[in-house]
Length: 203
Image 1 (cartoon, rainbow, N blue to C red):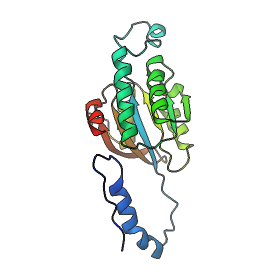
Image 2 (image 1 turned 60 degrees about the vertical axis):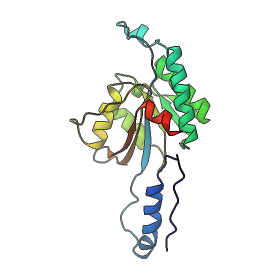
Image 3 (image 1 turned 45 degrees about the vertical axis):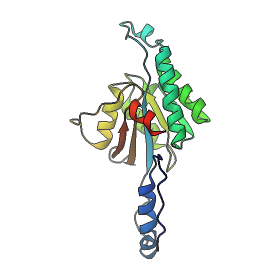
Image 4 (image 1 turned 120 degrees about the horizontal axis):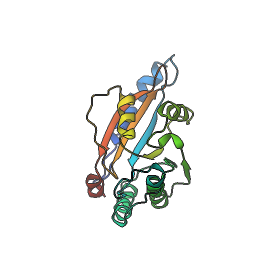
């Protein structure tokens, strides 16, 4: 009989998914699947923090940094993510300064060993090329992607197969998307979408 996993108060994880896996594991053992192992890559999509007013000149706008309030909020958000046990070992960020600073705060607090800049996460970055990079990640990877709007919600819409969903990712907000296939096109499901206020209340 499968042992139930007791959810700890205040925790935010995938315990229900763990229970389902344990409950079905015996059945899987009796009837081995002849199909290929399905893809499962969980990506955590983080929008950069507050960075002040947008500049009209692209070169200057790319150097726009987080405001003191934005840095303080991202620090709190990262601490909350640490408190609820978010597990990841890599973070990929847009090279724009506000995104890079957001990623650096998260990496420091969560002790993420790998931080890389990906041009594909720029506001005008190539989503097809981004998907090709994600397709090269190991099975069960759980990276954080740090970027901008409306690029991020457009990406979420493409992955879950809709362009009409009204998805709002606030500055400092975090979403979780599970990618289940890259062929013939990227596809997956939106697991959750959190505002900064909700994240802060979770710890």
